[in-house]
Image 1 (cartoon, rainbow, N blue to C red):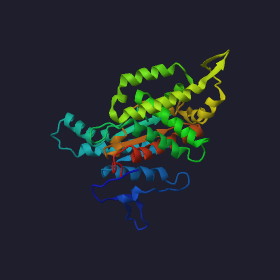
Image 2 (cartoon, rainbow, N blue to C red; image 1 turned 135 degrees about the horizontal axis):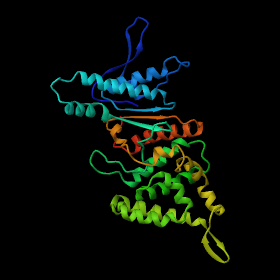
Image 3 (cartoon, one colour; image 1 turned 60 degrees about the vertical axis):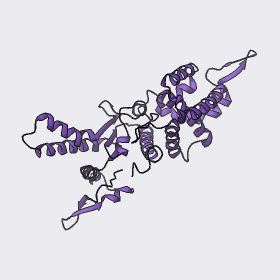
Image 4 (cartoon, one colour; image 1 turned 60 degrees about the horizontal axis):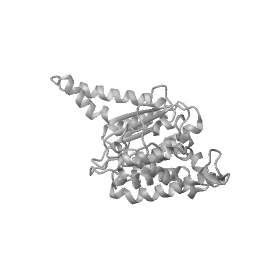
Length: 330
């Protein structure tokens, strides 16, 4: 995804038979595209050239590299861009000045994330962290939660069992975790560990987000509904009602079974979870045309890889649509 409104520019994507450049207006990248070709035909190289041209013309970009091989090329492209810019700087500039310009114009605009790659992953996205809007105001819990639900709705729009039950459960879980400042990777723990509930309430009180008038009614109501559903873990044994250990009673399984299956790839210990359980990158940088986000993964398991790609794509698309001011990502 790459867009800009500042000027009309044409992006080179190849060469015509007569040797002249083949270009597209940058507005063409507001829509989808497909590059097909056999192995070694140059698909990855073409994508890298396009992304490099788009970035050099001041637009943001989000790159999801399934195999991870193209990523190294893009990394080198960024380094070459910085090198070319450094050579063009006045000789009298100090090293500190040159580095500051490079950081502001090139390096700070790129955020690289390694997922399943041999290099450690230092960049991740917390799906439940309220973003800071251009006005300086933070998103409400409702905005964050709706963005999460919409993202999952897009991922599982055909395949999920008990669709409405799943989305309702996800909304309650996302709201509670967002209000407590906890990552989505703890959703399964919230469902399965009775000891997590009192910890969650303490964190919600400590964060104070529920005291914001925009959040109070929304959070309070969904916490109440979530607690009612968690009470399905209770069963009557020896004449007394008590919280049932796993395996849980059938009503609880019917309510949360599909939710647990959908959230399993995000549980801690799974490769995908490392990308979504912390917050070291601010997605609004890209949404406000201020940065470039590049993600690569080298996960061999097809299910994990496809899940990660789906979640990442749907998160970006839904975040830009539901969690950013109108026009921010256009």
